[in-house]
Image (cartoon, rainbow, N blue to C red; front, side, top):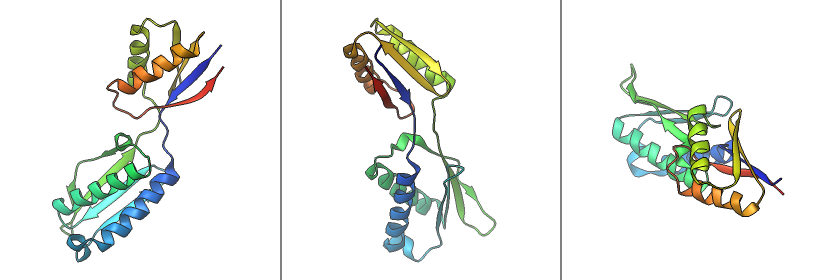
Length: 163
């Protein structure tokens, strides 16, 4: 029976490339060149650490980073920034995290959206992904197109399409 999986995965190599490209751009930007800034990626923890001289420069660094992530086909919805805080040296720091996997609440919402379509498919939550099975591939493709148009707070990928 045809099936596919709905997942939320991040290619950390692309994230690493985007961070490196953002660092190059930041180092050449006129408004950021003379100030202290840091942009560090912890690949294992999937965390970003940002440091800037003031809040305006921190926002500029975040914007540059998001631009480079989008260029590398990493969706901006997968990155969430924490609250900016002051440091003892007078700088502003912020942390960002990459969310991977589908949380149970979002998975239930996806299953409900699929059931509301009245297509002859079954959706089941499996760990941090949702498996959709059906008799017709056309029904599965209809589910994919419906989910692409839905307002879901995380980026979704559709993998393991099997006949």
